[in-house]
Amino acid sequence: MQALWFFNTLVRVWVSEVEGQDGLSVLEHWAPYGDSPPLHIHHTEDEVFIVLEGEVRFLVGDTSRRVLPFEEILAPKGVPHTYRVESPEGARWVTVTAHRDFERFVRAMSRPAEREALPSPTGPPSPGEMERVTKIAQTYGIEFLGPPLG
Image 1: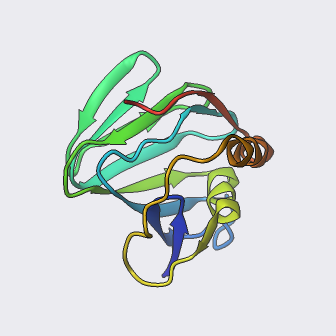
Image 2: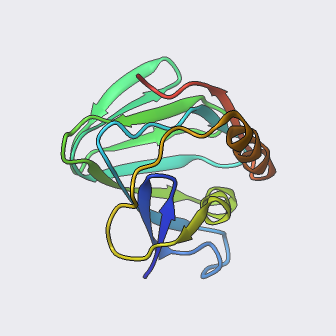
């Protein structure tokens, strides 16, 4: 199983979009307390999140929901969403997508994990870095709309 450092998270690729015919992707994410991406939309694919450990607060459209282990939530294509890891010990979840773009974005923004652990934390991206991330995200049908959850 390939492990990647994706920003401040560890991502394990369970099923890669290149393994099947339909671009199905199954990724496990391990993130620290407080991790939260900017509010964003995926224009090309739905995302299913299944929490394995910890507690994650998701905002999908106008609905805010705390998701606990073995609970799931769907972020439909075209609906703004984000999350925030609420448990002090961090959280692990699986993300399932079906049209290649999210996994390709993760790979474009990641580096191989040097160990099976979270990377050393980094601060928020600089304005120049955020501009670069935004352009790369657009390549994969992802549009940033607002700040992370506070």
